[in-house]
Every structure is written in structure tokens, then in C-alpha cells.
Length: 324
Image 1 (cartoon, rainbow, N blue to C red):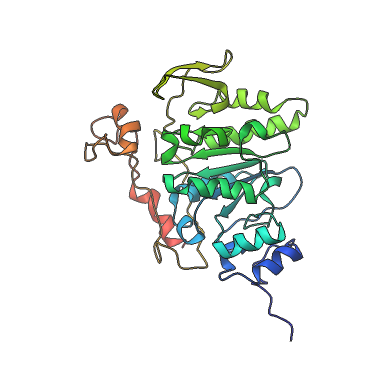
Image 2 (spheres, one colour):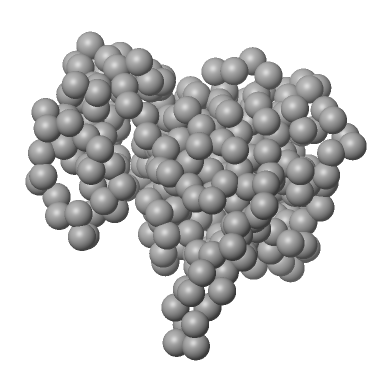
């Protein structure tokens, strides 16, 4: 008797036989096939291919609101395509290494090495080894110095981007602060660079450094003291001398998805829709010594927290609940 199809109604139409055969053997194939309600799958020539990577299991990453915002924001642009990829469970990783098969995205089963931009969300330091594991499984050189023009631009963001140096050798760019505005600027610049085939990857990184909030580690040379502390920082002659955290100042007008993806598996935030009613800490409820958001943002916030639009009114939130 033939085996039943692995989620035939939601699998990407161009799923390769090898990838399909691998999914027959894993414990939860729904982690890797996509096709959820409100997920976006785009096909066609000329699309800039972006993937948002969460270096943990599907059940954890699907509850991250930041990735949901960026996913729908990018896909709202007709010439941009955004997909997702999560860390493989041990059973899938073992099969990928056994068959020498690449890790793929959910929406189109595209190998990570065929993307234009791969963006990682760094939520906590314990996921750092999984970032390198996903790059290795995707067939992408680990260090930025080893990548060429055909490799994706590997970007990091999230809370841990506030201290990027432990992972600086592995990322082409690190976005410090809010990504709702910067992500489209990054996509447009990479899109323009790909059209101008004569430009080198170094020229791209130098151009990216001019986007506010974007840190390009390869443009800085660090000099250390004998005790291991940083003695001085030497920036690239044509690059910025420093990076200022990026902030979205008006949540009322900033993008927010009203049709979030409905997971096919039980996630850590089961039966709940995430919303963003406010950003950062406005009235001192959080100690700046232990809260990175307060450390990065509170020093420039007004006392009431609303005069710059750091809170979102109920009419801007309710459509999310109704469309789930």
C-alpha cells in the first residue's frame, strides 16, 4: 500500500523528492511544510527572496511577534517575498546530514543558500550555536569573510543585537533597535545591488552601513589590551564612526499585521493572538541595568510615553483579534 501524502494540501508544489522523503521520517513534519492559514507564498521572477530565521523550534518561533510583523510587512510589498525557517529538531538534522540535504524554508522549500537575505532573530544567547548550525545545514559559509556575491546577506536583529560582538564574525550586518522601518530599506538596497552586477559584496556592505541602526562588523577593526578589554576601535575610512539604535517613534502609524499566521501545531502561546500595545518602558517600571529595551530606548522617551506615539490605541489593535 502506498504511503499517505505528507500534508498534500499545504506542501509547496515544487517540493523535491528528497525533501519529501525526509519529511516522511520525522516526528512532526508540520514544523517544516508551512501552508498555515494567512501564510504567504509568492512565485514569479524578479522577486527579492528574504527568509526570517528563528534559531529554535517552530513551536517557540511561531509565538514571536517581532517576526510576525516583519514577515507580513515584507510580503505586503509586491516585489518582495518573505519566507520562514526554524531550527530543525534533532531527528530532521540527523537526516539532513545523512543525506547531505540542505535546510529549506517553509513556504517554497527553498534551500537557504538560494536566498537573497537571511535574517536571524537573536532572542537569547543560548540560541547562538543553533544559528551556526542552521547556516551550516543551509550550505552558507559560517563567516562573513568567506561569503561571496552568490551567498545570501546574513543579518541579525532582536534583543541580543544590542551586544553583537560575540557573533560579529558570522553576520554581514546587525540591526540594532526596531526593524519595522529599517527592514524595507535593507531590502531595497540589496535589490538595487543585485541589479548592478558589477558591484562587489564589499560595496554592498559599505552601502548598508549608511542605513541608520545597521552595524556592519567587517567595517571595524578592534584593538585589544593585554587583559582582553577593547583598547580602541578603528572604523572603515568611508564608514560611520558608530551606530545609533533604530527606533519607531509612532506606533499608531507603524505597520502591524491584522491577519497573523494561524499555526498548525500547538505553540507556546496556544489559543492566543499577540498584539503590540506599547513599546519599551516609559515610566521607569524597569531597571535600566537589567532591561535592554529600557537601556536602549528609555533615555530618549518623554515622561508620558505617548507624546511620541509609543502606545497603540485599541482601534489599531482589534482587527488582529477578529481576523484570527
